[in-house]
Amino acid sequence: MSKTKGGVILKTANEIELIREGGRLLRQCLNLVREAAVERVRTKDLDQIAYDFIVAQGGRPAFKGYRGFPATLCISVNEEVVHGIPNNRRLKAGDVVSVDCGLAWQGFIADSAITIAVGEVAPNHQKLMKITEESLYLGIAQAKVGNYVQDISRAVQEHCESHGFSVVRDLVGHGVGRDLHEEPQVPNFVSKDKGAKLEAGMVIAIEPMVNTGTFEVVSKRDGWTIVTVDKGYSAHYEHTVAITANGPLILTDGK
Ligand code: MG
Ligand code: MG
Image (cartoon, rainbow, N blue to C red; front, side, top):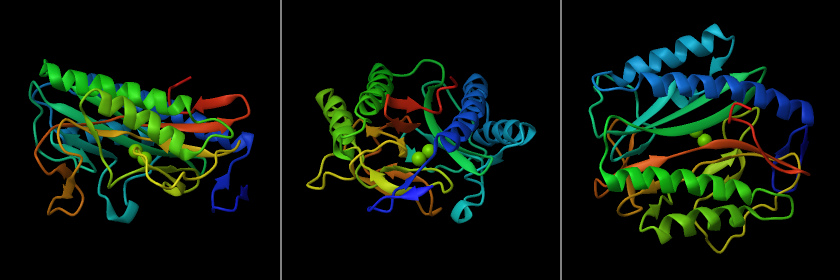
């Protein structure tokens, strides 16, 4: 393990492989949650499914207890953007459900999120999900040695905005490894700051959070749930990605 100038902790090939092992379990976990996310199911039922699976596999839910977060999953429905706390809410047709999960395995953390459509959702919300997921992969394609974080940000932002959506500013992607949140920050929008130069051994979570309306968000009174200011719907997709000499390596796609 070595640190670069910007405080970014580079990972060895072995460490990256451990994150990938955890990432495979995480993918299975999210697949189970996706299958279970049907009408009438409570968000806390989904959380229990994820907790039971992770613990049975010998992993640890990385969000649970992180800064006091009470659950295995962040589940954010419709106008909720991220960090929703699973509760008694029952899913209904048309809901757009973002599910974010961190899994600790052998001392390393994998972080990934998906957005699930419950039943039939409105065409614009289907489009929101599709464009957001596409933007994640366009961002990942820029995660290569010699590029800057800003190249990822630009790819995400341009795709989303060209389809009439907005990217959240207040929350960003991040380095990940022994800690859930490490350097560098990985914004989904371009600013004056080019951000960190990407080098082999960096592991980052790329996670576009994309809204139908304004990019402005606010925190709810529970201190966790982030919602859009205008009640527009939001989607969220995330992969943990290693930057390698051979290009970006997705560690949470189950491969
Ligand atoms: Mg996440
Ligand atoms: Mg993350």
